[in-house]
Structures are given as structure tokens and as C-alpha cells.
Length: 255
Image (cartoon, rainbow, N blue to C red; front, top):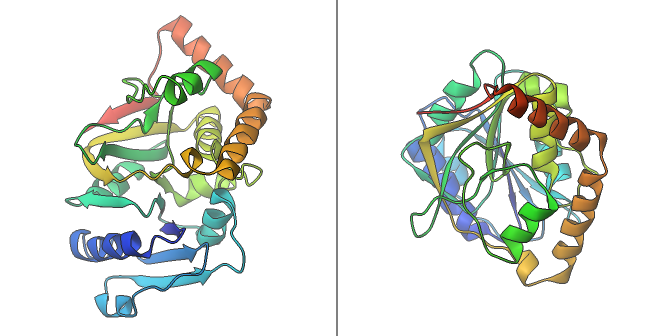
């Protein structure tokens, strides 16, 4: 499991303690926490005893994809997971997600993510298009898709074999779109994307791109890269073919 902190030690502390208390014993073998900027962390995590905890302290900030790829490098068996630090578990969602990820032909599994007000977050999304981006950013229309084409990377669980086959995230995306790209490549490889409706987490969003220019620049560069990519063109073609045939069996929701 990989978690990356950007000066969010208080949130990470709560999440790690929840993982130790609320997740079935033995499900999590190791948690890799990457501190993308210098920060002080609690010194009693080792006493939790529920899993191995490895801390990586970056000398300089790195991108979302590079941090998670480094943390999960060498994972060849079992399940891998990527979690945002600003998540709170509702019950034991990871047990449900890992169970679903072990199904035949599964590429990626995601939970239902709830905002702090209890409303569903838009972690399940339609095809990434200029219109969808404008709708989210300018019109503030942020509702989960009833028939998602991809899942935001705030919480995703994958078979290690699928993660290895894809080579993890594409590190050319500094921020944003690496999760879409991964989902698209999984689908093009014939693997399924699944949302487990009974697995739920709470998300306290911190959208730094609304307060800082640099993340916004990274977002725009990533959008430009993904829309010019062969992966995007092939995935859009696949979705259109499925729509024309009335077939949509490789993206589903279970509960």
C-alpha cells in the first residue's frame, strides 16, 4: 500500500491508525509512506504492530506517479493499493476491495467515496473530455458517473499482476490524468474496472490547484498530453464501439 503526504502528517496519522484498527488483521502486509516535503511524523506508529511501515523522505518533491511507482516497485504478488492521505475509512472497506480485486479478469477496484457532507464525490467519472473538464471546473458540476469510464486515483486497489503489466502509473504525468491513463490502459488490455458500492471512504478534499498556480499548470500540461495520446484515442474508440453494440460489461459496480 502506498500513501504520499504533502505536509499532511495529521491526516496521515489518523488514516494509519484507522488502517491498523479497522482492517482485517493480516490483510495489509506493508504500508509505504512517502513524505514529499519535510515534516515531522508521530514516533509511535511501530507500536501499532498491524503491518510493516516504511517511510520514504524525499529530498525534493516528486510527482504523484513517480512517488507511488517507487513505493510499489517490486510488488509482484497479491494486491497493491494507492490511498490519498485525506481519507477516512468507513468500517473495513479494504477487505471488500481486496476481495473484489482477486476476481478473474479484474484490473482495478475502487470504492464509493463520500465528501464530508455525506454526498458522493465524483471519483467515478465519464470519459475525460474538454467538456467534462469545463463542467467540473467552471460549472462546478461534480457528480459521480452512473456508468464510469475511469476512477480517480484517491483510492484504487489492483492485483499486483495488473499493476506490473501496466508498469504502474505513467510518470510523464506530473499531476492529474495518470489515473485516467492507467484505467484506460487496463481496459484496453481487456481487464475490468469495478466499483464496490459497499466499500466506502470519506474524503476531505484539498484542491491546491485552486490556490496555487503551479498545480494548475501541471493539470493543463497533463490534459494536453493525455488528449494527444494514442491511449486516449484507442480508449475513446473502444467506448464508442461498446456503446454502439450496447455492450458494457467490463466496468461494473458490485455491493
